[in-house]
Amino acid sequence: MARENGGPVATYTGRARSILWALLPAVALGLIGAGRRSLVGSLAFALVFAAVAGSRLAQFPALQAGLPTASQIAAGLILVLAAGAAGGIIGRGVGSSLAASSPAPRQA
Image 1 (cartoon, rainbow, N blue to C red):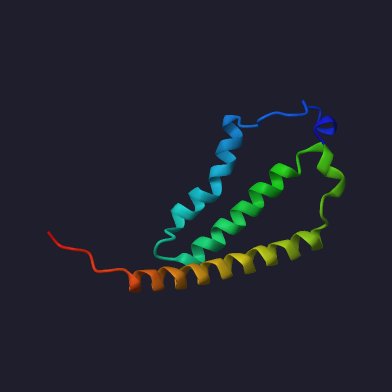
Image 2 (cartoon, one colour; image 1 turned 90 degrees about the vertical axis):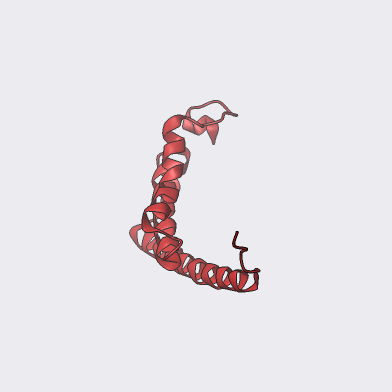
């Protein structure tokens, strides 16, 4: 795959631009305010992550032969939204149960 992409066989692609692309889903999560809106936050994270990962991976020449069709992309987005919603709902439930079982904070 590295030979098809025209690069060395073993490299670390941690250029500053790559790291900034990787931070976009976390920025979306922070802008939404996921502490108050866990479902919307998880959906935003899932959509931005899928968009960033898909667009970045589609740029590799070795992967361009297997790019999905429009219907496959739509099905993938539906699955991403379903997984994001499930994660938000489960996360809210786990957070609530952990908050209920933790002792009350001491006041000084």
